[in-house]
Image (tube, rainbow, N blue to C red; front, side, top):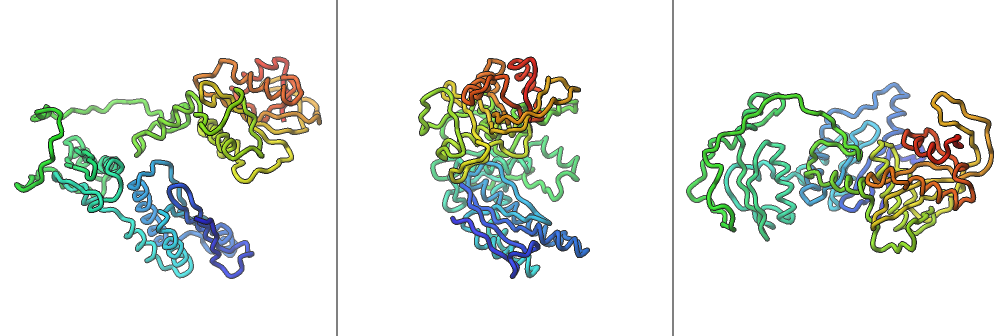
Length: 433
C-alpha cells in the first residue's frame, strides 16, 4: 500500500490547512487526520479547538472496534491512536482504509459521523454472543474466520475482561467453549457495581438444554476433581504495587498474556538476537548511516532497549530510510557474543567540548574546539553488565578515531551508570559536549 496524503482544504499551503495521511504497517494501516495548524487558527480567532462530543464518541467507538478486530486477527503488538483536537488517528485493517478516509473527511468537513459509526458496525465482533453461557462448538468459516488457536486466545482475553472463565479447546477447524462465571467474580461485581457498569449475570443458574452438543473426549482426567469443591476465599492485604520492570516494561498483566514483555525482557537480559542473514566477520560491527538497511534496522532494534529501559522519548538511532551521509559522522558500535548483540554505543563527531572532573558541583573548564568522537549513549545487556563491555566499546571507539580513551567526549547529561563507567576509564576527568 502506497503512503499518501489527502488535503481537506483548498489552500494546502495555508498553515491552518487540514490533511489526512495514510501509512501502511505490517499488520494494519493508520489513517491520521492532522488538524494541528487548524486548531491553532481556531484558538487565535478565539474559538475553542475541541472536537464535538459526538465526534469524539464516534472516534472512540471506531477505535475500540478496530483494535478488537486486529487482536482477533492475531496482532499482539502495541497500538496507539489519537482523538484530537490536534490529531485524530485510526488504526484499521487494510480493507477498511478507504472507508476510514471517507468517514474522517465527512466527520471533519460535514459534521456527519454516520460513516464512523457505520465502519464501527462493520468491524464489530459478536463478542457478547460468543461469551453466552452454554457448551457449544464455534466452527471456523461459519462462526469466526481467524485460526482456531488465535481466536481462542482472543476470546480468553475478552472472557477475562467480563470476569468469565472460558473452558475452551481449539481443534483443527473449530473451537469448543463453555463460558462460566466463577463465584468470586460474581461477588466482586455485585459488591462493586460502579466499577462494572452495564454488567449482567447471564451465567449463574444457566441449565444446559437436553439437546446440547457434547464435546468429544480427547483424553485426560476421567473425573472432575473440582466437583462440589468449596470456592477459594480471598483477603485484603497490602501487596507490592510496583508497576515497572527494570527492563522498562510494565508489570501489569497485558492482554497478550505477557508475551511482549517476555520477549522484550529476554532481549534486555541476554541481548538482541543477531539475524541469520547478516554475516559477522568480527565480534564488533560499526554501522553507519550508509550501511545496508538490514544493519540499520538491527541497530534501531537494539536502540529500543535503552529507550524503553530509561524512558527516552526517541530512539537514539533513527536512520531507516535511504542511505545518507551525515555531516557529523553518525555511527553505532554493535558488540556480539553468543549470537546476540550485547553491547551498543551510539556516537557522532563534534568540535565543542569542555573538561569536567565528574564531581556534581564542579563547573566545566575552558572550551576545546578539537574534533572528537562524542558518546551519545551506551547500553549493555543486563547479563553482561559490570564485565567490561562498556569499557571495550569506548576503547574501540577511541582506537578507531585515533584518540586516547581518556580523550573521547561524552554527551551531557551523563547518567549515573555512564559516570561510573567514565570514572573507571578516565579517573582524572572527561571531555563533555
